[in-house]
Image 1 (tube, rainbow, N blue to C red):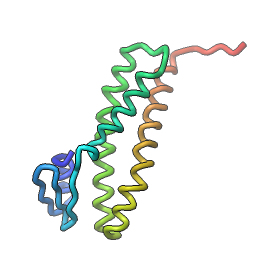
Image 2: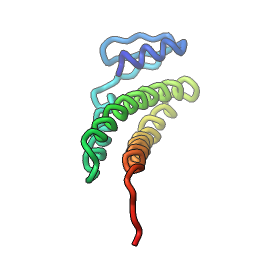
Image 3: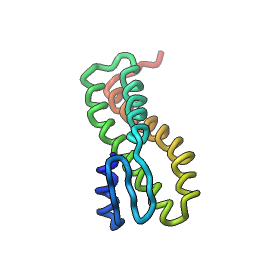
Image 4: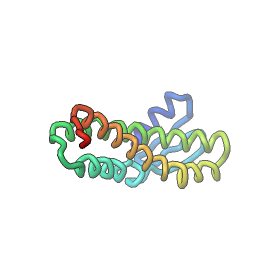
Length: 130
C-alpha cells in the first residue's frame, strides 16, 4: 500500500519520498502500518460474502475476486484524501479525516459493495409472495 500510495501521489504532482512503510508527501510524513492496508476491511467483506446462505460458491468467488481489489483501490483513495486534507487544511483536519471520516467511510464502502453484490447475485432468483 505504501508503494502504491507513493506512486499515485507522485502522479498527482506531490514530491514524495518513500522508504518501506514511511511516506513523505510535500513535507507530510506518515506511516502505512499493517493496519492501514485495509486487510480488516477485506476480511469484513469476505465474511459478509461467505455468510450469505443459498449462494453458489462460484458467485462468492467472483464477488471476492472483484470486491477485494476494489477495496484496495478504496483504501488508496483513503490515503490520498488524508494527504490532500493535510495539504489543504492542516494536520488536525487530516487526523479528523483519518480517525473519524474514514472509520465510517470504510465500513460504508464495505456495506455498499456487499449490498450491490447481493443484489446482483440474487437478481436471477425469483421470489414468490403468497
